[in-house]
Every structure is written in C-alpha cells, then in structure tokens.
Amino acid sequence: MKSRFALCSVVVLCIMVLSGSVHAADGVVQINQGRAVAGGVTPGDTPGFPVTISRPGNYQLTSNLTVTRANTTAIEITSDDVTLDLNGLTISGPTVCTPGVNKSVTCSPAGTGIGVNAPSEANIVVINGVVKGMGLDGINLAGTNTRAENIQAYSNGGNGILTTIGSNNTAASNGMVGISITNGSNNTSANNGGDGIDSFGTANNNVSNNNGGIGISALTANSNASFNNQGDGIDANTAIGNTATGNTGNGITAFTANNNVSNNNGGNGIVTNTAIGNTAAGNAGNGINAGMANNNSSNNNGGNGIIAGTAIGNTATGNAGYGLSSSGGYTNNVFQGNTTGSVSGGIQMGTNVCNGTACP
Image 1 (cartoon, rainbow, N blue to C red):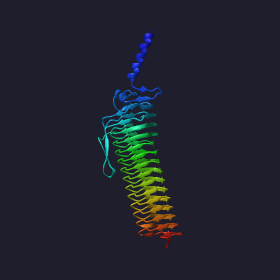
Image 2 (cartoon, rainbow, N blue to C red; image 1 turned 180 degrees about the vertical axis):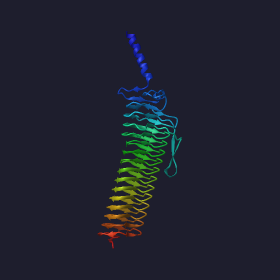
Image 3 (cartoon, rainbow, N blue to C red; image 1 turned 90 degrees about the vertical axis):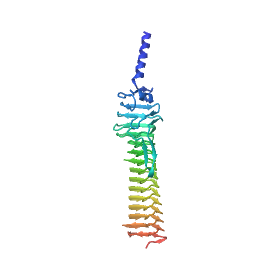
C-alpha cells in the first residue's frame, strides 16, 4: 500500500511538471524562458513565443525573456483581470533604435512584435521591469482600466508604453510616442521619435525632454517639465504650474494657462485664451498671446511681450516688439525697455507705467 502511494505521488508530480504552469506557494504563476519554450503556461499556450496568458490571475517572471525576431510578441494576454509582475527582469528583442536629425529616431529591424500585448482586455496590470528592443511596442494595454507602473521601455520600434494609468515609468529612445496614457504621474519620457507623453486626461509631475514631437499633450497638465522637444513643450486644455524650456515650437499652448514658466522656446512663450500668473522669457516669438492676460511677466522675448484683448497687472520688459499689443482695455501694467514701444492699440482703462513714468 505504501509503495503504491509513493508511485502515485511520482506520477502526479510528473504530470504537474509536464502540464505547464509553475505555481509559487502564494498561487502566482511563474514564467521564465524555459516555460516559454515548453508552452502550457495557461490553456492554449503553445510552445515558444508568445507566452499566452488566457486565465485571470497573478503572474510573475522568474527569468529574463528573450525573443530573437522583430515580428515576435513576447507575452500575449487574452484574459481580463491579469496582473503581471516583471519582477525587476527584462523582456528583450532584437530591435535597436538610434537618434537621427531633428530628434528623429530610426529603429531596425522593424516588426510587429510587442513586449506585453493586451489590445482589448480589461483590468490588466504590468509592473516592475524592463521591456526593450521589440519590433513594435514595448507595452500595449489598450483595454479599459489598465495600469503600467515602474516600467522602463526603451529602444522599441513603435511606442514605449500605452495604458490607461501610468506612473513612475520611463520611456526612452522609442521610435514613436514614449508614453500614451489617459492619466499619468511621475513618468519620464526622453529621446523618443514622436511625442514624449500623450495624455487623454490628466498629466501630473511628468518630465519630457528631447523628443521628436510635442513634449506633453494632455487635457489637463499640472506641474510638468517639458524641455528641448522638437514641437511645443506642452499642449493642454488647462495648464497649471508647468515649466517649458528650449522647445522648438511654442512653450505652452493651452485654453487656460496659470502659473507656468515658459523660457527660450523657438515659438511663442504661451498661447492661451486666459493667462494668469505666468512667466515668459527669452522666447523667439511673442512672450504671451492671450485673450485675457492678468499678472504675468514677459521679458526679453523676440516679439511682443504680451498680445491680449484685456491686460491687467502685467510686466513686460526688454522685448523686441511692443510691451503690449492690445485690442481691448489695459490697466496696472508696467512696460520697460521694449524695442518697438510700450503699447500698441487698446484703451487705457487705468494707470500704466511706461519706462518709469505714467503711460500717455
């Protein structure tokens, strides 16, 4: 009886080993290069790549995963409700991306392979690891309520990361957009061929630099830094407390722009409907172009300091054009040392100061 039980145990153990998934003690399914080659991680997972995750649950890498072809996807998720922990490890492919002219990026070999792909699945989470060298995208979580966190995505032929919520990620040297999100915070995107960060909701406390397109595009952009991008620094419906420096286009383009700093950009400093409490300096074009401009500072820009319908409580100094070009009323402004003149147009509604004395 005892020997029969021992034989049964051996058979069961063999079946478990051959059946595919390796489970940790806490129920997490472990994935490594050997399991990927063998297949059977979940039902429907054939030998080789991609590893197919067809069941909800928690999954974790226990070794690096390497694919050798640019058209090969490493992990394909076909189920909702999956959490994948890369466990500090790396998914890598053969693609190498190199910088070109005007912050463009060239990637070769190009392909259709994706590091982690969940094109329509919901409630997918991918965390803690590196995805590099894929023929197309690094992380593609295009379904609803997805999240990518603590991911480094670089040298992928397409986009670095696409997800609903993204935080504490880094995307660098990808062929297209660095990070595409709905809402995101504390991300860094640099040296990508397209936009640095595209957000369809709110972008908070992100850094975007040296990208081939717009630094940060968002519905609401708060407290971001965007510099040396080939397009505008920040394009948003509402921009609050951002810094944009050295971008080829405008520093900040927004419907409402409050308390931003925009310096040394190739276009205008700030283009907006309402501008309150901003600073624009050293931009090649106009400092601030707004429907209403209140309590802003615009200095040493290549065009006019401020263009506005209504201008109240602003300071414009040392600009190459007028301090203010107005189509409406202006009051309580200070203009000093602007090359073309202090004010063009508009109606003086109160006291303004031009070069140390009351404006005529």
